[in-house]
Length: 217
Image (tube, rainbow, N blue to C red; front, side, top):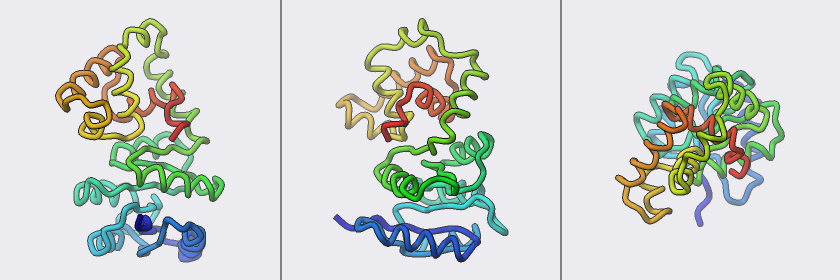
């Protein structure tokens, strides 16, 4: 199996060097490029086609949030992992809406970053453990909590589908995993979202955090 190709985006050279040394110690990963700003990230991603972009949010010129949106428009299958010092829910949700598959704090252990890279590269979703409580609190504050009655209203198949959506799988991937049609996946997803009062991807991720599903990622 070929090594995961990683592109690093951070405006601090010393940070990039440290990340490069850390990732270089992993036999299944290699850093194929570096960028110091959002515009350079887009150029490097186009030229190198990495599997994962490790993206800082605060960079000069085009910031990490805008660069994430642009990258997902350019190459939807490219996994983007935000690596940032921002530990607030607003930044997290904005990156998730933009299409990021993971969010890791620079304050976290180096092993967390390695775990996150592997998770997003395999099509999953990773949220730093320090952020899961604020995400869950956001869902509770928004909805007043998910009642046990509404949870039990979900069928077993609907829960299987919404769980896979929460950890980052596409409808097509879920169809293959569960051996059902894409149309059936869409129906189960829509029914589960209606019953739980979820309106979009971020709400589904919040619900997944509340259920503890993302802890297994």
